Length: 261
Ligand code: NAD
Image (cartoon, rainbow, N blue to C red; front, side, top):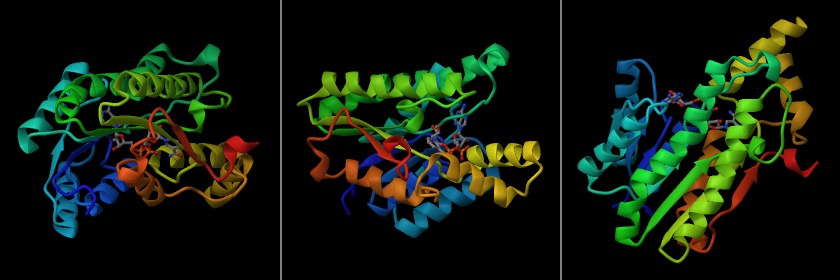
């Protein structure tokens, strides 16, 4: 129980990768603040099932991460509930796909706010307590798109490159303090965020959703298999372990070989 007695916030943990990471941290004993959108009863079921399955305390805070005040309230909620934030996983993210000249300005602003600025705001509020206690783990969920580009993803790629840069600076500013800051860069993971892109591909090519899934993953990911949220969860737990004490400022890929090409 590596994280027994520690408290973690995982943003965007009502779905996909965030949920996988939240479950893995709970499995390692961490108390949890879940965050993200969804239907109220479904979120309550999720919260209760994680708490009982892993024997941890879990709460949910519905902060909209496009709003800096609500991010401050999310961190304050965790500190009020658990007296501490030891692990901050900045995971919430959205995608919008369009050529740059057609990219809606409002979508650009939303992607930058949620995928990049929210990471800054979360760290800004959670770091003082971590420093005070002399221990903390900040895990930013970037993407292979923090390292390479893909067409039609200007906002996403800009935000994720920004997250990798932000991770490096926070690592430098916290070096030697007991706090580490790393980024995880996943390749394709089959979540609702990616399912939308698969559905759009199936529609545009007139092929089945299954075929579109194989096409999408095969085009970029040499392993031709999706990464899973559970695998990313285990990587996040590793970054919280003592073995990772000297790992900071890293951008760790888990991408089936995508960025090796
Ligand atoms: P998802 O759509 O399954 O989950 C996104 C989560 O973020 C949900 O819980 C949603 O409610 C929450 N969220 C969205 N907007 C929010 C807001 N304004 N405020 C609070 N919560 C909000 O997506 P996912 O695929 O699990 O993505 C999670 C992260 O992983 C994102 O940062 C994404 O960019 C990154 N990522 C995903 C993939 C992939 O292939 N799925 C690959 C690399 C990186």
